[in-house]
Amino acid sequence: MMIAGEHHEEDAVMLDVQPSPQPVWVQTPHILQRILSYASFEEQSTTLRLVCQSFKVAALHCLEDKLLDQKWLPIAFTRYDACSWVRADARRGWSDDSMTTEEGVIDTALWMVSCRCLDKCDDKASCPGTTEQLDMDAAKQLLTEHGKFRLTSKGTPKVVERPSVEASLERKVGQNLYQICQQVHESIKKEVDYHYLPGSLMKYYGVEHGMSSKRFLCSLFLVFTDGTSPQDGHFPEVTIALASATVQERGGDMYSRKKMIFRFETASHEKVEICLEGKHHVY
Image (cartoon, rainbow, N blue to C red; front, top):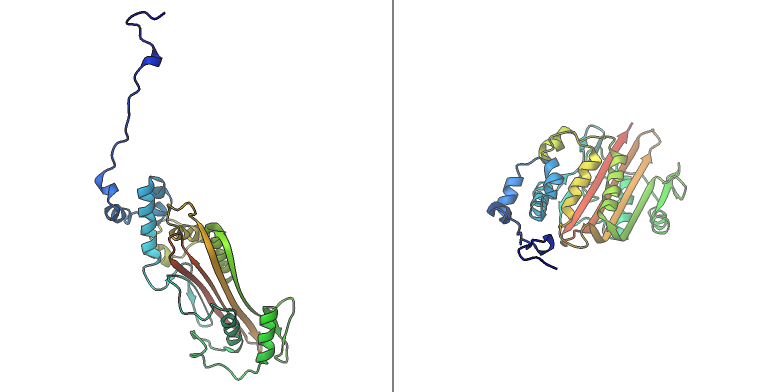
């Protein structure tokens, strides 16, 4: 029985509490992005992305402006000295590089076998080349069938367990952000032995404190997602091309060259290319 005037908790009226409206500067993308652009790289790639969806999108745009605002931009330590150079770059869009077909990758690898340039030469047309003789037909056949070979002391190609010349082109479907980032990181680590970012990269990207090279690369890879798609962080197809050659001449000089290209489309269908290239001369 209910007594008049008696109050029961279950009869209490529930208040309709609505979230407070966001400030105008948060609702305006270009204003929010301009404000977040003054934050450090660490804040843009971590804490600011977790505030809300608007902050996440704006923070990713800030990172994108740093990474893809030029034709080529270093994403790892780039070294140039008297006998070697290494670079790892990212770019918006795909270049006209010849390493887009199996034949193009093989031709690039065979050119590397003959290249003896101490300075950087961009392609076969600008390379003076050498008088070194090579059975091109046999070498091309081995690369086509096996993807690798080793030069014998007579300069003839031969398939062995430890090849000196390699060429490969593979397309992987359904890879996620971490898998691609891991492959790029491992490829860079083989060429450059460093654990923390050099000062030049820290200054350009606005990194305030010491950051490991892998963490930095993972943070940059956030740019390749749109932050909203259900498939965020997954890529329909990734093309990985590799051409490398290490040749030791009779005098003892060793020439080593490598080029690796990663191509994929982001979650928002934007074409991105990452190029790792290096050259070493040991005498």
